[in-house]
Image (tube, rainbow, N blue to C red; front, side):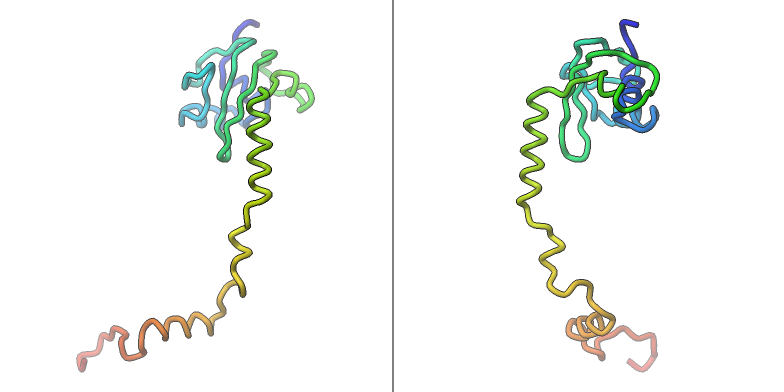
Length: 137
């Protein structure tokens, strides 16, 4: 086998759980082969560089082998090799995530209670300012 559809290869290399997920990502323009946005039927061959955008990071891999069957993970890892630039970018992003503060930790008391919400609403609107459907306004 010299060439294989990109959606099949991504599925066999275990980048996506199903072939339809791989096809959807390709159709959204999140997968490139040799710097070009491709369609699911694009054929990939050994030596191509495939770049994928997932979860805010770009991962580029070099195609080492082709397979149209989805095998176990150790065999799937033999189908590609991640480029050194991609490895450095992933490590830098992981390092950055380690040092960035978690937004949820800035909340001192957590979620407001029912009483807190009532107090907030009363502070924003007086009880007499509420809309009423009565005729005697």
